Image (cartoon, rainbow, N blue to C red; front, side):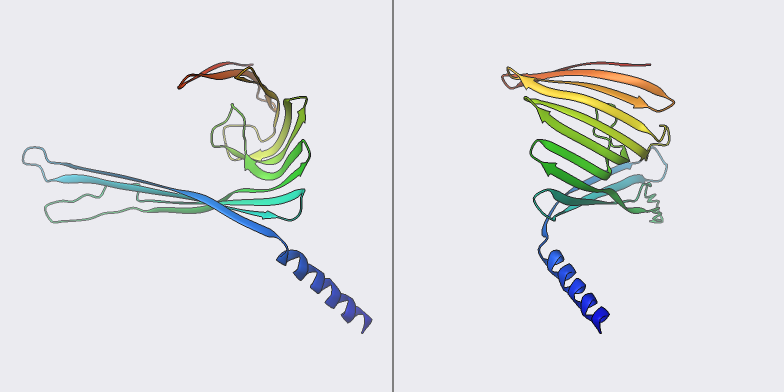
Length: 212
């Protein structure tokens, strides 16, 4: 009987903690459509009818003042093929559908310290839409942000799996600047220095990069 009572208390505590979680959602949808019709001489009329749909949805669950869970799901749908419309009105369509979890990490914040642990974007100037599994830590020190990252895995088959990166990011007199270093294990080392500012309505940016 004692064990049953303990299990009931544990279940009640779990239910209370879940109900206290603060959830928020955000997302975006992009739709692209391209239609082109052509007829040359006596040839049959042909048309290209291509569409692409991208949907990103992010759910954030704030557990307390320090920890937040983040999950982003990306859904893509497109025909990726030309619809051939001949005189006989023949329609061929090859479809493409995919749903992937592109981000799944826990964010820790405490004063000027932030850490992201789990699957996330490789948020550096060296990469575009690549994603990896690892740890990113950022610390604000006297107006500067010092960052360090280590990734064990990434979705780019052309890169080594392990990546390290460090950065110093700041701003002074209306000028933003950053210095990034990255080590793609057993492949290459690289650095990039970035300076950007705004002159009236015009944004100006300068970047110098080198890899070895």
